[in-house]
Image: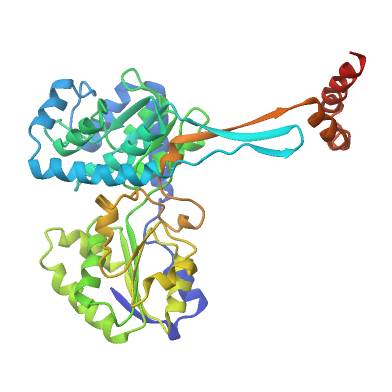
Length: 433
């Protein structure tokens, strides 16, 4: 990790540091676009070829059988079963509380407007399973989908070398009652769900994180009228920590490494008012790194990461809002005091006992979050992500009479005579009767 001092950084330096170390180059975009269009055209055959090419796994049948699901459930360690149940309980409790009361509003006499939410009926969940399978993502996506009322949930996850899906992923899906599961990974899985194939149904919206190929495939299919909507473009994991001299270097280092071990393109950032804490933490990072099983991955992520000694917590918050991190951890004496100043972040963790690990797994909030600075304009996955809203209006004769002058004036101003007549003819009919 590189160490900077805020007093020596120009405005341009700060903008440069907010740029992420990853981006889809032109050749990657072209490769993914070609793949998606090929799957759109040839269906299953294209998916089989790409699975053999990229996953090195020849797959003849994509669907997971009931026997495979039952076997995974029966052979899940008790400790994992308990963890799944614990996490699911908290995730369900948090997301169930997101339900909004849709009030009927009488905007004026005789004019009542309201909004009702309806589930997106068919949704696709993508569950990564590369260097680290993510059964927790099954909970993070499956539970809000079920709470939203989606009637068909399709799950895709990459096969292992033996052609099976990770057992923990299968067991978690089975726990939620998700049975339509396919062993397909990468961009070809996104394309298959977006367009539908002979074996995989077309979905209306795709959810889930993935590598740069998955992310680019989601971007492509969401821009194709024949494709599918997506939740968000979730790239490599990010963490920004704001700390003062109250924080313990060993804990700060552990938090940084917890996200650095996700992906070589992950990025972690430390902003601290203490020069001593910054230097001690960087030393601690190097020591802890050596003991990590995934130290090679974390080391590459740390190469693109940095720490800044800032002049004040206010300065740290200002940079954080510019960076708009996926995860923001505030480890200061008074973390709650910082909350009103936070404008842009995916999920925020307050205090010395709130590791990002809690949000990753079981505190209740969702871990599918915006990355790459997109927290400035988009939220993480929620129940609302699996629904859309329909507005309604009920208008009485009196209500239409009150609205008529404004309606006809706008219609005539815009040169839309039929719009005006849709109002005036109604009123004339009432006068004649």
